[in-house]
Image 1 (spheres, helix red, strand yellow):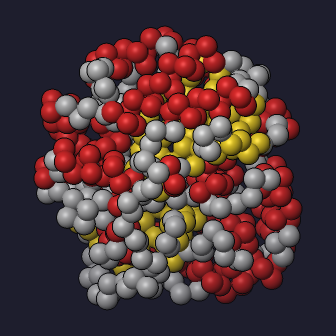
Image 2 (cartoon, helix red, strand yellow):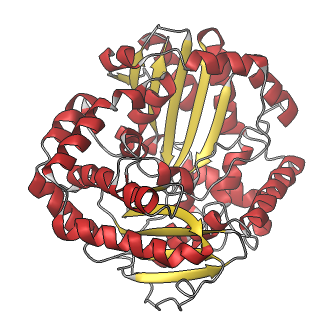
Length: 482
C-alpha cells in the first residue's frame, strides 16, 4: 500500500516536525483501501507507548551488517516493537518525462503480491501478523516503512525482501491500482488545494522534474505499462543509495542478519538519471485558477534555503515566527485580527536540487484579494524589519522544547533518523540541534528574513473570480536548470 505523503501535509507541518520532514514536496495520495484489523489496532496502540524521554536518552548506533549494509539503529526494549524506515535515491524525479506517476504506481504495487504469493495471500500474511508495510515516491527518494511486533520480525523482513526483489505486477492488480489512481486524479480536478499545489509547482519549476506531478496526470497514467514499472524499480532499488534507520526491540547481531537477508541481494548500483540544480522562479508572480467552489484556496511561496546553507537554521527559526502555528504573525494578522481564514501556515521545504518556502490558507471568494494583501503586507514587514528579540527568544524556546514531542514514538524517531541521513547530517545531530537553534542571533534572523521574503511572493489563487483575484497572471519565463 502506498503511504500518504500529501503536499498539503508538508505545508501545515510546522515547528519540530518541519525540520525532520525535509523533502515533503509531493502531490501524492494513498493507493488502495486502508486495511484495519484488530491486530493492526493493537500495534498502533503499542506505537504510542514509547515515550520521548526514552528516545531522547537512547544511543544512536551506526550499525554495519556482516554483508556491509549500513543502518542507524536505536535499541529500545520499552515495548516489543520494531520500526524501520528506509529510502533509495530516485523518487518521482526519476519518472520518465512523458510518464509522470510511474514511481507512484510502483509504490502502490510492490506489496500487491510477490514471488508465489498473490495479492490476497500477501496481504493476509501481513494482516495476520499485524505487519505494516508501505511505500511512497517523494521528489528525490523512493521510501519504505516497516513496522512489526518483535515476535513477527522474521516474517516481516521476509515479506519486505519478496516485495523488493520479486514483486509480481499481475495484470489484474495493475489495472485495479491504476483505476484507483485515475479516480483520485479525477477528484483532484475539482479539489482547490490539489489544483493550487499543481499550479504552484508548475510556476516554480516549469518543465524541471520537480514541476511534474508525482502521481501523474490523466494523460500519463493510462500509458504507463508493466515494463515501465519494472524498469523504474530496476533502476531505483539498489544498495548504493540505500539509507536505513531502525528503532526497537532487537539486538544488533540479529538486526544485521535481517538487513543482509532483506537487502543483501539487491543490485549493487542504481541507474539514476541526473537531475539538474534549479532555483525556483523569482517572485513576484500571481496565477489564478478558476474553480466554482465556496472557499478560495490561496497558496504562496518562493525560493527557499537549502538544508546545508549556512542560513538554514536562522531561516528555520524566523519562519516559525512568521508562519509556525497559532502564535505566528500570519495567524494573528490573517485569522485573529481580520477573521479572513480559519487557519494559515507556512513551511520551509527542501529537496536535493532546490528549496522553497510555501504557505497556504483558505477564505471566502469575496475576501481572497484582502487575504492576499494581508499576507503580502506581513511578509514585507518581516522582510524589512525582521523579528523582535522577544519573538526570537520565544521561538527558540518553543523549538527546543518541542523537539522531544516530535520524537515521541519509535516510528517518529526512525523517520527523523532517516531524514537526517538523507540530509547528510551527523549521527549526533539530535544532541547538537538545540545548540544550533540557540546560536541564531537577531542579526542572523533578520538576514534570513530579508533573504527569504525580500523579493515578494509566488501566489496561486484557486476559486471563484472576485475582482481582486481575477486579474491576469503575470507571464514569467520558465525557470532554467543550472
